[in-house]
Image (cartoon, rainbow, N blue to C red):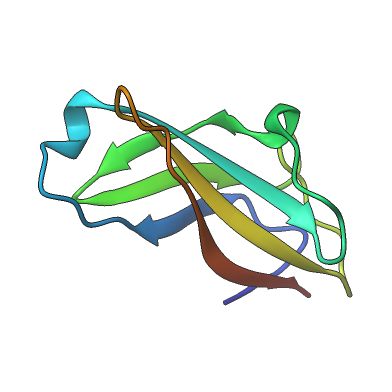
Length: 93
């Protein structure tokens, strides 16, 4: 996925499970490619039509820098499990 660095838009990640996802807490992390993931990288996300969504861009919790690539992760709190899933790469233009 490519997102202009000046754009403010929702980043969408499809999530499938055999439970009602909207009842679970979801977070997303967007980190520079080559950076180690840590728990503090996760930010509150929301559910929309079976997808985890989070606003990214200027003025948001996560901003993108043109010319860099970012790894996207989703974390779902589903006691006793709290899976972390790599969703893909975002390229900032």
